[in-house]
Image 1 (cartoon, helix red, strand yellow):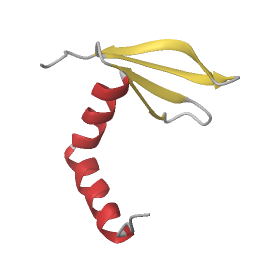
Image 2 (tube, one colour):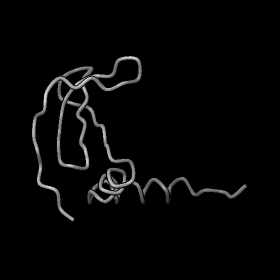
Image 3 (cartoon, one colour):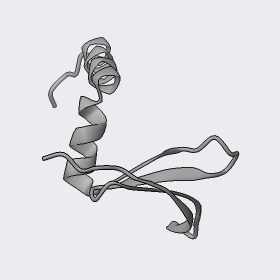
Image 4 (tube, helix red, strand yellow):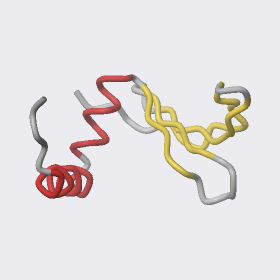
Length: 75
């Protein structure tokens, strides 16, 4: 088993989070990205097509309550 330098990994994740590189990679890889919304127990979902919606999870499935934005998609 390969040893992982946890501090270096944390620094890399932090750097890529600050630049937006990590979020972009996750979105391009998975097609969807979730983050906490301002309202308690709500989440924001960002899709590859630029749609941003808010909702909650019920039995492991995202329930979309409202679309809050449609962002331009850059290629």
